[in-house]
Structures are given as C-alpha cells and as structure tokens.
Amino acid sequence: MKVAFYLASMAVVGLGVAMAVTNPSQSVYEDYATQQLVSYLKTNTCAEAGEVLKGSCNALLDQNQSEIRGIIAANTQRENFGILSIYKTNLSVGQLLPSFLGGLLPSYQFETVGVLSSFHIYEARKQ
Image (cartoon, rainbow, N blue to C red; front, top):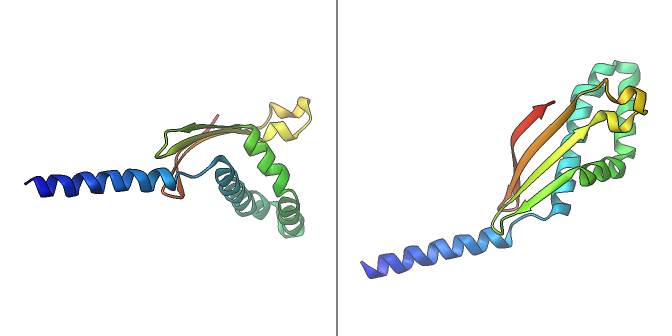
C-alpha cells in the first residue's frame, strides 16, 4: 500500500514539474496568436474580398505580421499559475482605423490556456 502511495505521489510531482517546465511564455503565445489571427483573416476576410483583392489582402497580412504581433502583445494580459498560464486578449479592429471609423467595427475577446507547450482557446467573444 505504501509503495503505491509513493509511486502515485512521484507521478503527481513529476507531472507538476513537467507542466511547470513546459508552461508557454508570453512570447510563444504572441507567436501563436499572430499565426491564428493571420490564418483566420486570410480564410474569412481576404477570401470574401474577391479574387482581385484576395492576393493583395494575403500579402498585406504576411508583410505586417510584426505589427499584428505588436497589437496582440499590447492587448494581452497573462496570468501565470506556474503549471499553466491564462492569456486574455482584447482585439479591436477599430484600433487600426482612424478614430472616426473605429467605433463602427466590433471588438473581440479571447481567453486561452497555455499548458504543456500548447494553447487551447476556451472562450472567444464578439463584443
């Protein structure tokens, strides 16, 4: 009975250490979120722009990934729990437009958990 308890305890401690070591950083999250957002925009926004503008739209997204990453970084809060992290990102397309147009477009809030070197979006809301 004691042996099983010790083995179970070691397994739990080992899992905790593995989770702490593989807890993704803010920088890794920003790379992930940029990739996800660019992919989403290419699939949903650029594809709807028509064949004439689709190529230009895709190229514009590809050329501006560092700016997109900067917007994500500036609008993300990380809660680090040691073994996992929660990332809350508030994105407003209006931030990219002149102030008189900014209020016309919706904003979005994403909540993502980072654990074991991967990310899982568990909430996405349009505001």
